[in-house]
Amino acid sequence: MSEKVTIALDAMGGDLAPRMVISGANIARERFPHVHYLIFGRESEITPLLDKMPKLKAVSEIVHTDDIVRSDEKPSIALRSGRNSSMRLAINAVREGEACGVVSAGNTGALMAMAKFVLKTLPGVSRPAIASFFPTMRGETVMLDLGANVSCDADNLIDFAVMGNAFSRSVVGILQPTYGLLNVGSEDMKGHESLHEAAAVLRSAALPGKFVGFIEGDDIAMGSVDVVVTDGFTGNVALKTAEGTAKLINEYIRRTFRSSILAGLGYLLARPAMRKLRKRVDPRRYNGAMFLGLNGITVKSHGGTDSLGFANAIGVAVDMEKHGIIEKIQSDFATLDRTPGKARAATG
Image 1: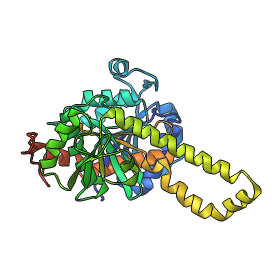
Image 2: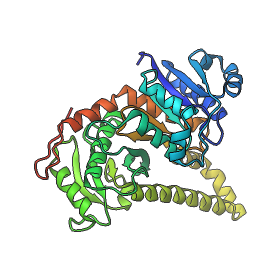
Image 3: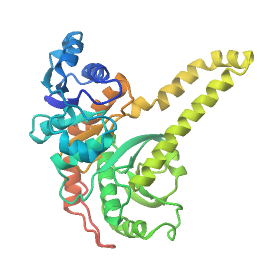
Image 4: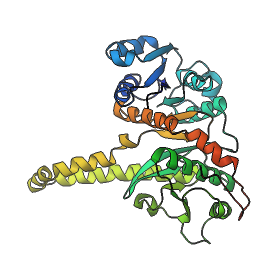
């Protein structure tokens, strides 16, 4: 892929900004030499960092602004008062066609509110969703929504299924993805009415792949499906539970190997295998949550990530542009019939 791609970066978002953002872009530059960057933020802080990275500086342009969105700022306030913030200007660049996507490690609620206001949702999409990857026993699973929509009806869940299916095909490269609705049981009678209504439509929707029906919480880590569909409340709880469990297991392993001299010797023997394990579950590999359903690519990096994690978030945005995720979602929604038993969707 040699065609020029421009990504807008909110340089002031994140715990370690702007250093983490600029260093992350420099790492991403090696993987994506065709990408150019519009970097929004305080020029006095960004320029000294770029001066140390001449190759990145050659493909970057700084757009100065003193305003930033605080990590604890309410989305409604950020939307009203942050018109000249680094986050808002970066989103504006996508709307104006100056960049094909925006990446920010800033305030999640503010980023969603601003992106939805500026970019609008795609035709047929009532609410955008936050999607991300989960490491599983089979590889990687896409899950959505992860917190954008606490309460969802059947139409929202159908939207999420269509968008997750399109993302899995376009970016992950699974041509015939399996997808299911997260429920309290796999039996047809389990769960609330919105799940049943959504399932009735998805069972007859001619989306590529296979709708498997209802799945349970343990199916996420098992990798039973390629796309997990749920409301934002449940998805966010599942995400935070998985993150907490990973930290717990890591701490148990650390304490175990430090419990005795023999355990320490065992660690020395197991160290190569432990390196592989850490790399496999490294959260930086999965950094970069996608806001699906917007008329423009928006990627949210974890606020506490480092430069490698931010580089991976940039990679998510580049891959979404490369594989035409927005066009794929539009194509699927254009022919989706939401009538139970009669639903049809494009397979392109």
